[in-house]
Amino acid sequence: MFELRDPRVKMVTVTRAEVSGDMQHAKVYVSIMGTEGQQNVCMHALQRAAGFVQSKLGERMRSRFIPAIQFVQDKGVKNAIEVARLIHEALAKDNPKPEVEEAVAGDSPREDSP
Image (tube, rainbow, N blue to C red):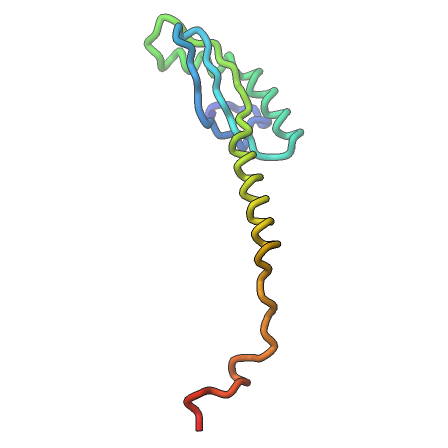
C-alpha cells in the first residue's frame, strides 16, 4: 500500500486477506475512512491498482502462481464504530449528566469550621 502513488488511495487499512486453496484468487478486505464518495473513488483506484499489487506480491512470493487480487470493502469496522456511537448516544439519554450545581464549593459551610 505504501508504494501506490495514486492520490485517490488514502486512509486505507487492510483488515484481512483470504486466499483460495489453489492460490489462484485472493480477496483483500480493506477498510476505508471518509465519505461514501471518497470510499467509492478509493475502491475504484484500488481495483485499477490490483495488477501493480499482484506484481509486487510476485516479487516476494516463491510460488508457482500469483493469486489474482480482488479488493473488497470491509464494512465491519465502520459498522462497529456506528454501533458504539449508537450505544453511547442511548446511554447518554438514559443517564443524563447532572446539572452543574449552583453552589460553589467555597460558598458552602464546612463541617470543621467553627
